[in-house]
Amino acid sequence: MASIGRSGSGHSVQAAGVAFHASAVRRTGWQELSERYPQDRDCLASFLVLELAEVLQGEKPANLVCLANKRRSCGRNLYLLWKEHGQALLEESGLKVRVLADRGSSVLLLLYCPMALGSLLGQKSVQIILGKAGYQEPAEPEKVLSELEKRMAGEGFPHEIGVFLGYPLKDVVGFMGWAQISFTCQGPWKIFGNPAESLRLAETHRECRCRISQQLASGCNPHDCLKAAAAVRSKAAVAASRGVFLQVN
Image 1 (cartoon, helix red, strand yellow):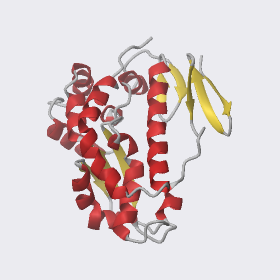
Image 2 (tube, rainbow, N blue to C red):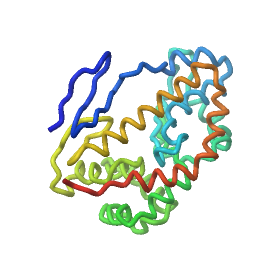
Image 3 (tube, rainbow, N blue to C red):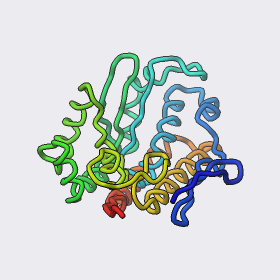
């Protein structure tokens, strides 16, 4: 049985002896950090570094990033900055992007590590789930991403996107109603069945954000953080395999 309570100054979710501390350690938010970067390109780099913290550190294959076409409190429009500098910044990191939707008012990006995503799609269990979801060639990254992009343009929302983001498979199929797994607790995503591994993974993701935030707050150049992604791509591939949980108890 999961319980939600307070731990120190933040909320925590506890289940099976595992605790996920939603805000046990305060991290510096991007709005505060953005003031450190007078150059537009550096400002966008700092935003991407925070939003991609788990991917850059090899703990997730991909993240979704949504940029609204409006001026932020810092005075900058990240949507326009992405159009101008985004591709060059990704080249520094070795990551790739798939534009899932660009409505003019906002853009939804899937930013991913090619090696990690390829490793994830190479998992038989992942191929079975994506095949059931209607993906004709679930082991082919480009074809799978093209199908995902096509579905994003449709009327419904492709909830199987949780697979691409490295969420535990039991939580993805539980959320989609494909397996008789009971809802256990709410973390950064809805958790089904035994929550232990899911909560550990969520805590790992939180720690990634905290580390990047602390590095930027201490003066680390965001471009250096992006470049470091190339050095952890092999680790990301291992993490993608490790993150696939199929137990349903």
